[in-house]
Structures are given as structure tokens and as C-alpha cells.
Image (cartoon, rainbow, N blue to C red; front, side):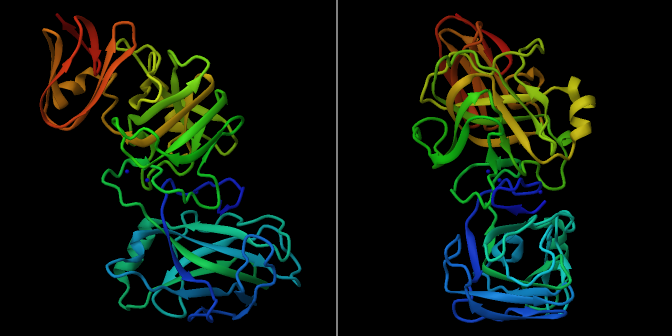
Amino acid sequence: MKKIFTILSLAAAFSMGMQAQTLLVNDFENGDGGAYVAVDGTCEVIDNPATDGINNSAKALQINSTNFAQVGFPVNLPEGRTLADYTAVRFQALVLPGNSNTSWIGFNVGVSQDYETMDLIDPTNGNGAAWGDCVENTWIEVELAFNEDLLNQFLATYTSDVRNVMIKLGRAEFVYAVDNIRLVEKEMLDDPNTIFTFETMDLGPNTRCGMPWSGSCEVVENPYTNGINTSAKCLEVNGVECSPVTLAGALPEGHTWNDYTGVKFDLCIISGDDVAWAGIECGVRQDSGNHVKFGGAYDETGAETAAYGDALQGTWQEITLTFNTNLYADAINENASVPTFYLRLMKNNLTYLIDNITLTSEGGAATTITNNAKAAQIYGMQKAVVVNANEALTVNVYGIDGKLVAARKLQAGHHEIALEAGIYIVNGKKVVVY
């Protein structure tokens, strides 16, 4: 509160974890708008040669490249915005007839302050094919992510007011067309560790959230906004065979998994054959398709346990998973920079919602007793648990049987949570209510 190039159904190795609106740079319906070729080649506006696919606009830009021509597009940003407020460029591309080799064509993306040079801002320096064997005269959707560190570095040194976005095709002699150039806007987040909020439906040309072997997921309107989660959007998951939900681009740029100790998110059970006592695990999905687990829910003794007890269907609760330090050497260290994260509920035929997925760097409140002294003083009294919070925090109250009794998002101050007499686990601390 949110890397190979991304094309339609091709898997993304660096696609963003953020959802955002787009800003139209050029659709070529009224001329080229200043589009130019910086090295060897030409460009001109043509009639769209293939209006029966994903792009039915009337015009497009044809590029005739003779030596890896760099194509530039002047950018007029809204007042107060810079290119640093955007995280990718998205456009449609089409291979025109007459090329000798159309396999494994890569794109580079860059920025420029003039009409000659191109400063590359690829996350992987262009070491990936934008598409494999293409079909001529068939439009595809392309999305190229920015390396934010490189982008900010170049913007800080530019002396001209000119701002251009540039792309370069990985073929020396090639004829192709592009259309509907858009910038993908960052979602401005209060917490830089929040990687998914699902606040827009614009997930890009690839599926940033997927179910690799069974089930489905989609962004939907939040149907339960009267509890702890008042967000407008969330992710609905229809699990069939305990299939994990994969979240592409979940690792914030410049970080590794060693920088974090857990993950928290909001969960709401919709329906299922058996919704009680579900465990949840987390980890990364490698390019090979293997899922490497390095976290889950743990009880106060450190043993793996259910992430929630008997869930009240249609009610949001906050879940905290802790990365297991016993797995660091074998799991986290070996996959420290793998960008695709996964969450897996260990139940078949379960429909649920998840939202506000945030990486934590101080451990899970429900499993780390040592953090309670920093965040809050917690103790029992007659018919209530007292929470004197030093800062805003979420309090999860579990019965001694492991069932979630109450979940509250509290601001700093004195709070009393009414409970029946008994023994409870409150943010990992055993509390007696009398």
C-alpha cells in the first residue's frame, strides 16, 4: 500500500507488483506527435494493417529499422508529475511482412533528454525476448518495466526540460509497428513494504496474480467493507487443489527476502467444504515452476500451526506469517532475489479474498512475543483484555484451542477488548481473563 518482458500470456520475470492507471503518450490518430528515430531508420504514421485483433484503432506508427534504431516518444506529463512517478511503458506491437527472422525479438526501454541518445533503464538490461516466433500482422501487448534506480539517476543529471521515452528493438534490420504508447503510473503507497492492494483492475497484459495448477483468481469489488478492511478492491481466489496464489514482482526493488521476516495480509473466507483450521504457507516460485517454502504460521513454541481457526465467513481478519529462520540457509538465501512470491491455503475447494499484502521486517505479531513490549502492554482483567498501545497495531486474540476470537486494528492508546473468562493468546502472549 504495490521481471523477461511481459507479453499477453507469457510469464513475467520482472513485472510489477503494483496496479495502476495509465497515461496515454501517443496513439498516432492525429499524426506522429513528434515520434522520431534517433539512429538508423525511419518512422511514419500508417493505416492500421490489422484491425481485427486487440488493436482496432485507425492509425499506427511504422518503424523501418536498419541498425537497431531507437524510437523516441516525447512525453507531456501532468503538472507536478515526473517520469519517476511511473513504473513502466506499455504499448502494442506488430511485426510487418518482409522480415527475414521474426524469432526471439527483444525490446529495450530507455529515456532521453534529446533526440539522439538513449539511456537504458531496463531492469535486466534487455536480456529477454519480448516475443518468440511471432505471427505477422498480429498485434500483441508489450510492457517494459523501469529500473527505478537507473531512472532516478538519469533524471537527476538531465539539464534539458525535454523528456522522451525510447524503445529499441533487438533486430538490426526490421520493419514493425507500434501503437497506443502508455505510461504505467505507480500506486503511491504509505508503506513501501505494501506490495499488493488491488485497488485498480488494471493488472497489465500479463496476469500478475495467478494460480499455477488449479483454481483461478481475479480482482473484485470488496463485498465486506464494514470490518477491518475498507478497501474498494481485493483479490478473489477460487482454490481447487491447494493451488498457491503467485504474486509476480512482489520483491521491492533493491531488496532481497533476507530484508524481511514475514508477511501480513487481510483474509476473508467466502465458502468451502471445511473452512476450519486452515494452514497457510508462503515462499517463492522459481522460474522453473518450483515452489520453495520458507514461511508459515507458528505457535508460541515455534511449531507450525493453523493460520486461523473456525473462520467467520464474510468477515475480514488479519493473518501474519513468519519466515522460518530454520529454513533461511536452504530456502531464503538460495532464492534471495526471486521476485515471485506465493501464498498457499492448505484447503481444497475454498473460495476466499485476500488484500493488503505487506512484507514485515520485525516478525509476525502473532508469533513473536519479544516485539510486544515495543508495540504494546497487554494483560488480562475482569471480562476483558487490556491493550496499552505505544503505536498503531493489529491485535489478534486466539482461544487456547487456536481459534480466532477477535481481531482489532487499534491506534496508539488504551483499549479494552471484552472477552469471556478464560485463557487467550494475544499477539503471541498468554493472557488470563477472569
